[in-house]
Length: 95
Image (tube, rainbow, N blue to C red; front, top):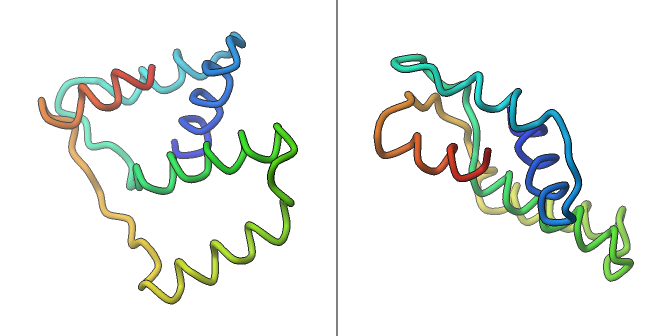
């Protein structure tokens, strides 16, 4: 789910059409538990992809440094999230 959310964000900001919206909307079935995901990872990765695409970021070096920072901070554990009114609008805004 995270990879598809990243693809959707990057593509939509560039005004590209993808199947990501349809794929992500499948996760919004009422009462269905969402797979574990990290909104921070999604937004950070989308930003990194956009920076790489614009040529403002050397890809490998920046990714390595980000992994080192994540490990030093405890690594961003993923937890299961259930689709409920507070989470659904965030996911809906992505699709």
